[in-house]
Image (tube, rainbow over all chains, first blue to last red; front, side, top):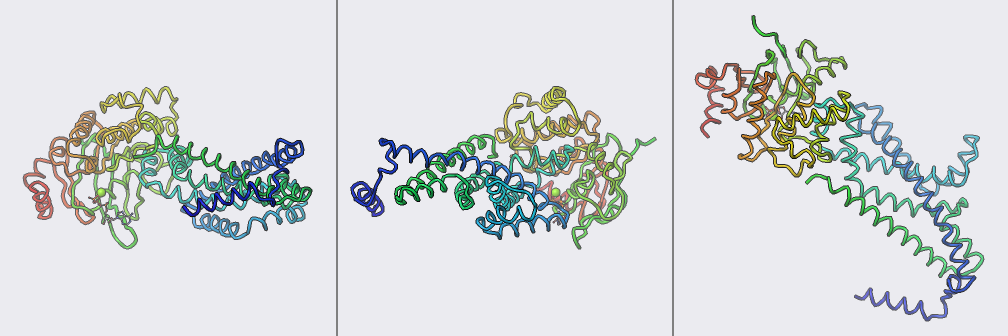
Length: 245
Length: 247
Ligand SMILES: Nc1ncnc2c1ncn2[C@@H]1O[C@H](COP(=O)(O)OP(=O)(O)OP(=O)(O)O)[C@@H](O)[C@H]1O
Ligand SMILES: [Mg+2]
């Protein structure tokens, strides 16, 4: 209740206070519409960057999780080492290292986009691996035994029996990671990636209205993430149709 | 001349860490023979039949299935696995697949059948277990008895020579037990080699060629059902039968 009053007060203040200058992003003026368009022009890049990174990180995460569950000790240790190492590096540090460090190390030039994708995907893959591991471990032993008794090999057992069930169970966690990825993609602005946050920063420099511009930025992420969350929940409901009791 | 042995078990021993679950177990099962194994909880019944299809490995002794010894050799293990079907107490159906898909997965992926051939095969066995009308449903929409019959059909779709049953009716409500036992009795009539772990003694009397009593990791008594139920030789077996027949 008290929160609602406070929230209302802030909104009222926003409407009448002289310290706000919504004109910078007022779509009814030519300049405002142009600024708004400029801010929104980063949206495509944020989505492309996050989507590419999440596809790679899910794949890498699975490829790291599977040996982590094998009976072979060396494979388990390698998987563990990957997760522990990658998880220990802050994302921002990883972005800087991939963009500025990796080209020196490898002799290849890496575009801003791919540096961002690699850093985000690498960082996220450690978490994906842990999520997959937990999901796969939650499947009852009887499922493996039934697959064994109808002569399925390891690949077929994973592909047709274990993973379809595990993925249904980890879908909420995968959804979380996707949201997290969308937010972390803002960090790639530091190496000049023209995504949402970078556009806002550039506009702030030329218009000098940080309050309004960053508020729009907040709303951009909010709307984007609410849409993604709704999509994930829809997918969960759809797949739940054939989940166990 | 006696029928050739389909399963040969010689001095089989199995340990979980220091705990000896099977102590030098020997047993031959003839082709087409029906064996019922009973015994107290923890006596090693499940472990014994799980060794036969390679679900458990063993530390000592020999298992030979249809002439193929079960050991380190992967090709031999794969062959044995294909010869032996298994039905579990908890059914272990694949919950994300329909009944038909449960039945087709092995034939398509492991036996290399076309989808059409696998579907025909699956429908044939669903009719055998008398639930062809459930083909499109998911396992959770079936009763326990129906689920277990689907599990039996799933194993049969691999066209095994031997069927193992590990307490197939223990997880069922009483009114569903007979529909599963009837299907098994019918299967017994087809000449399939069967090993059934069960405490359903009426069923055992009906289908068993020989009864096996296990206790503490050993086979204590093997006898045809007439003798087994009326004149068990060992005191342990007598006590066990007393307990389960007159509870
Ligand atoms: N994976 C395992 N690890 C350790 N001990 C095990 C394992 N599986 C079985 N055991 C032990 O081996 C013994 C025999 O188990 P088994 O399941 O073969 O008995 P059972 O005769 O089938 O009993 P039940 O009637 O309860 O099913 C038991 O004491 C059990 O605790
Ligand atoms: Mg058992």
